[in-house]
Length: 123
Image (cartoon, rainbow, N blue to C red; front, side, top):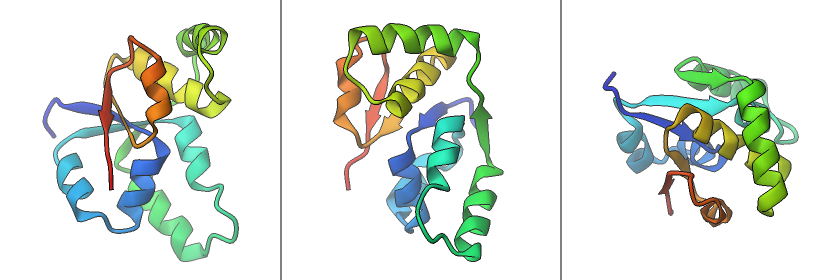
């Protein structure tokens, strides 16, 4: 893997699971990091089949999953006090800031946070 790291928001991973080859090419040879929140959101879809669960688990095996630690909590608190983001998005943003890597997302709400490096993915 190259040294290029990226934190993926949930929506690009859903596109990847749906077979988006352009996104797969973009992520090829990158270190893919995710927040534990993204891991949980991927399993939040109602009526996931066992096959769906296995596909998600396989994909997650190639990701670096970051748990919520003290630094992420401190950044999260700052984000929530200063910007209007939902709890999951604020944790994901705090994780990207903590790791000092860009966030790959399709959600423009993240642009509110000036010190967050963003890569927008549009379908």
